[in-house]
Image (cartoon, rainbow, N blue to C red; front, side, top):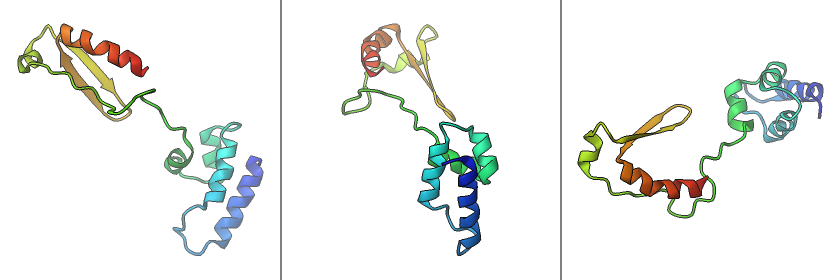
Length: 121
C-alpha cells in the first residue's frame, strides 16, 4: 500500500460515506498503520487529511512503562508520616506525558524499594 493508494481509498470513502461525522472504517486504519514504517506522522496526516490526534489514538505505538510486573502492579512501603516533612528525605519523581508524581522517601525507605523497582526494568 502506497501513500497515493491510501489517499485514493480515503477519497473514495469520503465521497461514499453516509454522513459527515461517520468514523473512519477499520480497513482504512489498517492501511494507515501500514504506512507508518515508511512515512512520517506529519506527512500521513497531511496527505490523508487525518486529524493528528486521531492518528495518535489509532496508530501510535503504545508505551510500556513497566516490564515483567507480576500481580499486584504496585509496591506498598510503610513510611512514617514525619518522613514527608523532613528536608533530608529523597525526592522520587515519576514523570508522565501530562502529569508528575513526587514522592518523598527517607534514604532507608528508598533503599528498601530500589531492588523491587530494578526488577521492573
